[in-house]
Image (cartoon, rainbow over all chains, first blue to last red; front, top):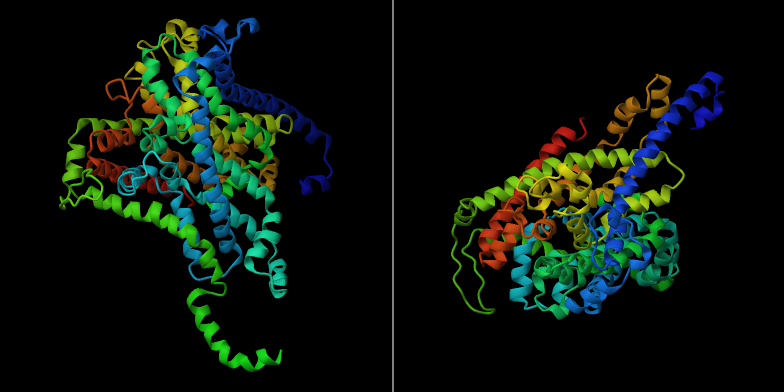
Length: 296
Length: 309
């Protein structure tokens, strides 16, 4: 960049550059637009299908007459699985994980970045290692321990426990706290401030964007999680929406005459909170944060 | 002030011992203690327990009951792999990875490179790419069932070209359809990773490539691809691990790994054997073999795609 602005650009250079970049730009636009269509169409189709009494699978069905749209499917799915119960359970599960991550994950991230203590390096290595431990290895022993030994099946605690502190969040917090100038903390420590005061009064206000990133990233884990709550909850009154909707898809839907309308209505209810959250706070969900969380 | 000065020689010794034992700020250990306990309880102990279960005759017993669980060596592994369904599930996940991993790497790198250069609609495009990633699999599975069923939109568009039996009930197409679904669902995350990596490729390299007469395609292969190699290794690793964890999609899209187990994944079999049929020991053995295989694949990927020093 800087070198080119310093050098004088000859007319021939500019000519060939614009010609090349115009072809390139067209190709790029086509690729990007095609990508956006492929990614967004199923969501459009989900909403359209949920609003049709009898979802029409033909091409014309993708562009229905707005006058024929109804909310009947939402009432239908609500009769089979209680949407409100599902949403409340998903909410409790997610809030529990957010609470654990924001309190204990933040403390650990701060300790890893700003305090010198024995075992700091090992703890950081653990936080990275934990992220690559595949769940399939933990599935059986966790089920045996939590459902059988601790008797926490059909219990919010049992649901939350394996996700309680998000390790990616710990690594992101550490990354943000590392960027804060050490002198700031040294000065406050000389003034006699305790570490908790430092954390609460100085560190947290300075990393507020990180808090939002972590909330977003942590939110999608439990809200979308299917396998674990599916294993641990048999009682429909305690199932998160992802589990009750999946049970509807796998059992009831097979017998119903036209199950798609109700399924799609349930899918919209499950997807909407997350999609809205990520559109509103999109600027906090950027590549560098996610990259640092995975790479360390 | 004077009090501290006189007390110093006596007190200095104690802090130094403490410092050597616990570090300069032992409070850090206290702050991290909940996280460490969590990791110990939810990761370290279950990991060891998993190995123990796999090598013993383990079954579900009433809580608190004293039962004998003898060491059985490799019996659980033999029991697992003398079942053709288990072998088949490993083959299925192999097919899945062969389609999903290369497709993921190529598409996410191409889209990230294209996205990196645009200024207009950048936010819109970025958000639309990661929306599938942040949405629950269970929710989008609903739409895919609608799109890919026998009379679904996809077959309506394909007309006579539509496969018979349709995608999700065909032994040939069930697994590839799942692989495409997962690629579509996860791609946004890998695009974000590549976008971050692209910021680290020096602009000067593109300029000197263009001075040397390299076109867009040429500089993509000689500057971009080598420039993002560490990210590629990461994408390979994460997509392989995610693929080996496959459960929700075969469970819901193909009604529990159908037809005839053509889309059953090892984790689905682990669920069926371990929790439905009450053989957690056999399921744990399958899990261990799966993880060992993933580690081998990851090592090979790192060997052949990683940094060559």
